[in-house]
Each structure stands twice: as structure tokens, then as C-alpha cells.
Length: 209
Image (cartoon, rainbow, N blue to C red):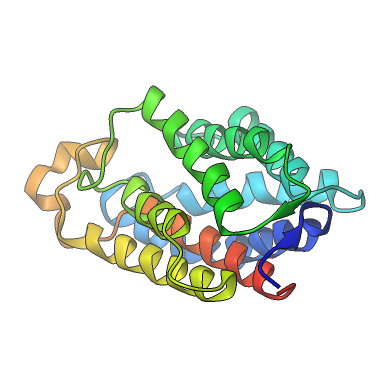
């Protein structure tokens, strides 16, 4: 199949939750090298609150993203809550209209979230943020190299490459930006968590294809 049903999205969201929970300590370690060290704790808190609040309910992919985004935006600390909250809530609103979701639809959703993020932060590719992971992933979805499954696999690779690219960058935003050149040589924690989320999302969708 070249798409999955929006109505089947619950398992995809729960796979994203588990991925963040499984990587809580790792995200804290990465963030602790040049940041506050609380990224894993905060992300785990938000995703776990979502799971406890919605896990027993039925919801679509877009409804799940809306619920997750709302929790992250309103209920976790740090700057990443509002950032991820904005991305997910805007992606959800773009996805409400889709009964089935393929590369074009998922690309539309994630691009909408990314564009909304651009409206609230000035970060761009090369600034050592999650944009370095999300933007190339969106580009793959907008220019699919093959079937939806092939496209999702390539999206994962683009996200990984984007994440890895942040290691050689100097941070432009957040606490780590104060370190200047000393922020080089370490992955950006937001780019890492974004890659984890996108990978889990892709893997969850692939199970339906």
C-alpha cells in the first residue's frame, strides 16, 4: 500500500512515545554535554503524560498529534515543549482533512509544522537545532524517491544525516549558544530527539504498508 489510514494512527503515536521513553537517559546525556541536561527528562515527562491521558482511548493519527502537541506545549519545562508542541499541533491541523496518509499528506503535515516553527523561531538549517533533522526529512517526503515505504526509509536516513550534521556546527540558539566554538563536536539534543521521533513514526507507519 502507498498509504495508511489516519484512523490507524494510535499505534504510531504509541511507538513514538516508547521511543522517547527508551531514550530518556541518552537524551539527557547528550543535552548535558552543552545544555541543561534536562531534555530527556522533559521529553519523557510529556510523552508519558500523553500516554497516561490518551493511551486507553481511541484516536486517529492527527488527533494523537494534536493531543501530544497540546501536552508538550503546555505541560513540560524548557524551550522544547513549545517548539515540539507547535510542530505537532500544526501538523495535526493540516492532517485533519486526510482519511488516508501517504508521502504527500505526511509531507504536508510535517511541512506545516516546520513552517509554523519558522514563524516563532529564527532557526534555519545549519544553526544546530532540530531544524537540521526535520527540514531534510520533509524534503524527502515532498520529493518521494519511490514507494511510500521506500520514501519513509529515506526520510529516516535524511533525519539521521541531519542529526549527525549538527556535531560539526556551532550552536546559534539556547544555552549552548553561549559556548560558541566549544559547542562544536557535540550533537544537538533537539536534533537527536527529532530523529528518534521521526524514526519511530516512520517505523510505525511502515507496519501498515
